Image (tube, rainbow, N blue to C red; front, side, top):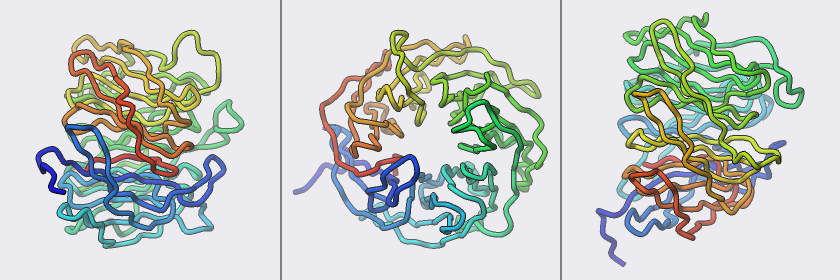
Length: 361
């Protein structure tokens, strides 16, 4: 059947393929899906076999896909680099890198395609690798490490890096450490990719908050941080050298008194709305982002209909939001109101076992 190519997009989904203490891994690897941007439906194209490719990231030129191998240090953690063919959705493994530490849970690449940041949850460090002309990481990484712990014995026994990003203007690297309740900033020389291993700033949250993911505002003037253990989001105004907290909100309804933790956080392409997954409440939370006023205003929460919405992703045209239910194994599609940011459940789901991370190609 011929399809209108103007309404077709592609995405990849990272999954857990082997079990971890927090998940029953039932996936097969990296799933390549087609997405109909008019109907809001998904179709399976291919599956690239891999071990626990829980988090994936696409390079800015859309030529390379990077996938972590989230396993214990004794089981061979690493990072795989793929070439992506948009003609048929195939992934060609270019390089597999064994990485030190354990449980790499997040990967990102800077806009200049020169630096890759890998966050090790279990052992707490962030590894910064230089990329060669083919977009392949190698050499000895710069290691960004911290010490300390937090009040949650189960989750904060030591440092647990969860996300690292190159900041606006390529002047800094920002990272979140769930284990020590800090968002940390390191100076970056954008010309040569050299990172100062000593942090020049640390944003300390309430004890036990557990910062998880970072997102920069559309203009780059603000930083959004979601705090996993307290289900909150903070908005920081980025200055030089100061960073100022300007807004703080909960991702949960006031009447909810159960256990929940935030998951993925994504910004709408317009920059006006931010979305966060609530694991436990099993919903997607939305808030309006006003950079000029420095405010976050809650819009609402919408039930995903499945357990543990680990990640969410907004389609490139801003019309749909996809939510991955990790423990019930599907992706649910919502439509987005362009004016208000509110979601509407389309009623459509697509089965993906142990879905963790969604990345539009």
